[in-house]
Image 1 (tube, rainbow, N blue to C red):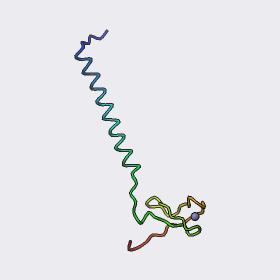
Image 2 (cartoon, rainbow, N blue to C red):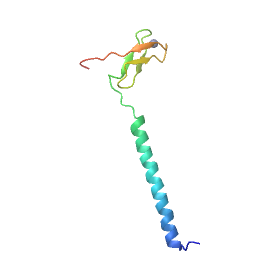
Image 3 (cartoon, helix red, strand yellow):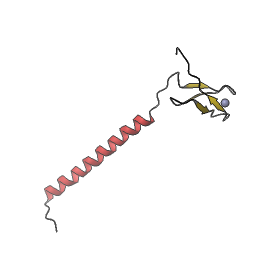
Image 4 (cartoon, rainbow, N blue to C red):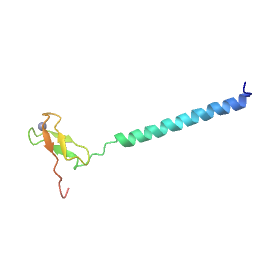
Amino acid sequence: MIGLDFADGLFIYLTVWLITLAILWGRELWRQKVNDWKVSSSQLFTCDKCHYAFLTKENTNITRCPRCNSMCLVRKRRGL
Ligand SMILES: [Zn+2]
């Protein structure tokens, strides 16, 4: 049996909780960074077929329209 007094047990308990909270906090910061939307005019795209405006992800050349499901080529706009 491991000899452990109350103070050492409390210290270990609090340390484990602080490490758990730090891990969860770091995970939440990472999730906010990954799922954060940064809306800009370069991401706004209008479907040529149904004229529905929607947002695309950065660095994509081809996407699907969410309304009519047709393939849309994303053209790079200059000067915007
Ligand atoms: Zn469309």
